[in-house]
Amino acid sequence: MKHTAYRLFKKPFFGRFMKPWRWPEQVDAARWQRLSLTSESGASLAALLGEACAVQVRGAVLLCHPMGTAAKGFWLKHGHAELLRAAGYHVMLFDLNGFGESSSTTMDYPLDVLAAGQTLQARYPDLPVALLGASMGAAMGLCALALAQHPFKAAVLESAFPTLLHFWRPYPLPRLGIQLSRLVYPAGERRLRPLHAAQRLVGRPPLLLIYGEEDRHTPLEDGQQLHAALTAATHCEFWQVPGADHTLAYVAQPEAYARRVLEFLDGQLGAAAGSACTAA
Image (cartoon, rainbow, N blue to C red; front, side, top):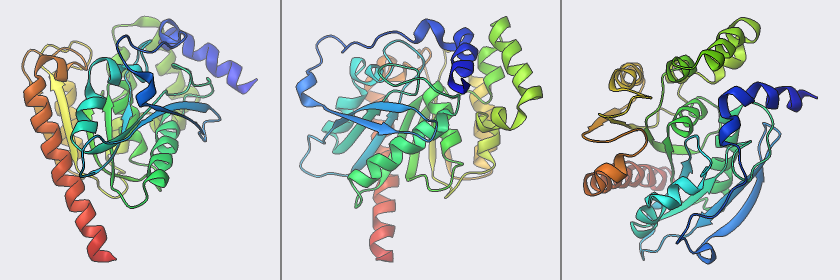
């Protein structure tokens, strides 16, 4: 009954995106291992694991998708996953609950990110784990960084919104639902508020925020607000991408994206690996 109520509440927000999942065209499914894991949200989450293609393995990266019927396939369709694998990173893609091939339960999406991250860390216990998220995946990933026992040593967050109201402000029905949730269930809304999480980061992982200059859904001023809050808590870089629309920085600036993101991950995860060796 509880999950039924949540599914009804989700409809105005995500109903048009919760469709049967298909492999993106021209992606070889044989190169990916299918996984299933359980989240504390109550959902069974579908995931894909791809091993690094490079000789030197640098770490592992969890990819958290934006809203859309592609779900985890977003990272396959646009090439992010192969970029990371070629650079020496194992990658794991997964569907947030209710999207793609994952079952639909509550709105506690940060718990899905936490479960996926812990699964990836358990798979590679000797490697540092990072988070790469876009839009909803970036915002819920940031909220997961405020949860105890998250495994992430660094995060790259593209098009993350500061609050749910920031993203849904042009849409009357979802906006009303969020406003009501603040009155009826304020603790639940706070758990999904990146600005709230920014003040409570566990482990202070360094962050790279990415925002496109052509993004109307999460405009630069939203990113700057989040950046200001995060800078007070941890090392936080901000990259403003010319010509990039919402979640499409890699499409707009592929060479610059590859250089900026890989330099950040190599630097931060290399430092994390070095600290672990020193501690050992």
